[in-house]
Length: 514
Image (cartoon, rainbow, N blue to C red; front, side):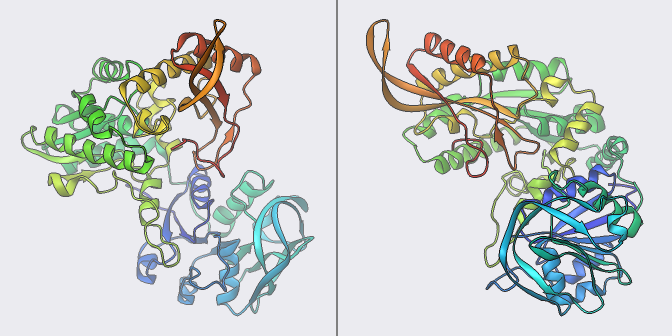
């Protein structure tokens, strides 16, 4: 990005909320990045942050292999905010004392502010906060003062205002903390004195100029999936280099009803993209034959996609670049480190293809979160049918069929998916739920259809609400909607005699079944 003046650095200790901290800061129009806790002191200093936030995490400072940072980091002359584990790390490294709590706190707690602080300016003296910790600080570091407490936590926040070191035992980044947004903004604007310089309105102009300069008149290739990320990346690149961009859409035969043709038509007619459709349905079905393990299915689909894309890309002469819709969460997950373990999640779209294709990467969305990408898409005038589209898994319907995949099962699932999509749209819920879809469970159950015994498979319905897909809750669909969907599937889809509704949240379940 050009013209980014204020920068916040978040040191990640493995909290499920780390990305949420970053998103809240970006929503306040301040640029930030996330580094893993084991980043070198030099790398952290070279980022030249205006302030540093130490995230929470699942560990105890006394655990074997617990994530640590060097004490030297506090020599960097910027404000620090430690959150939960980040606060405990701060206390521990600066000669405070941390111990296991007699009464652990998980969920809402009532916070009492006992000392005036810039961090709490404008906050109620008593309010609800979100706690998630098993350890507590029993002795503050020298020259630190306690500024708030809860019934079970005598040090809910502390600070050394002279050194601009602040700590919170609770999570200000979650919506459950009543004054959380105000606390974060107090840290940003009253303590760190940063400016609002992260403007998404400037992003398109800057990125188009950057892509144009980088490509320098050479051709670029983009793999399109029909989803938000690849579409926005392609439209940005198209705006920068025009007919030098060549897009490839691989139909793996695992898409929804008529999706391949519809997407290609939309890309060509509405977005004016130069896109080629590659029909590889038979190849994917052949490769998946008899494969039941979901991880094997994913790997087979991913590997075959790369092989097909490689083959098609080589047909494009003089191509020098590969455009990918890599998002910031993809980048973060690919470098996260916890204790002795290394990468916890590897993304095929983070530096995976160029090694084989000998192409340089263009990742215009690499700095963005999903919600920011949707805003950019709207600013690019990409129609809502793409921008507001529900997330769809890369392996497609293959991971919505439990067990092995074949044409018959795909046909059954497509018919059910069409019904679910139509009824959700009719009910006015389209765009209001994060995802809604059927899952085919090829387990036979007994039923009665037309006064005869039936012995057929079942469909599980899944509808969840979420803001980012990291956590999700099931949607309490109206019984009339469920009844209509169930009746239509059983009467219209041959091979199904039972419909069930999934009422589990994430966690403990995942959104997709496989």
